[in-house]
Amino acid sequence: MFMKNRRNVQLAQLIIQLDLLRDELYEELLDHCGSRADDLMRLLQNSENKREIFTKPIPSNEKKAYIGLLEALFLSAANEKSAG
Image (cartoon, rainbow, N blue to C red; front, side, top):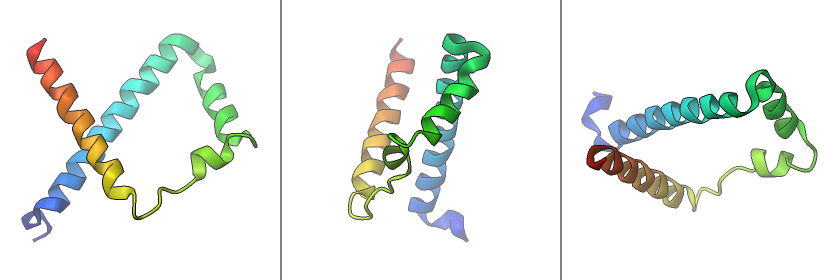
């Protein structure tokens, strides 16, 4: 039933792509920082100066724009992979 709604499928696919991208970025961070990657993540997440940036919710009137940008990013990356 929920698969019939195209937007639900698109959102689920976008979440999966974000999860994969997160994994790729974390692997890159590990390459650069080694075992200190988790320490850096924790430091930034818990930093008083950065807390507002990382925990600030996206305003609901801007969510569609953010989703559109993410979709464009993933389409561009997919095209780049298939071309190269």
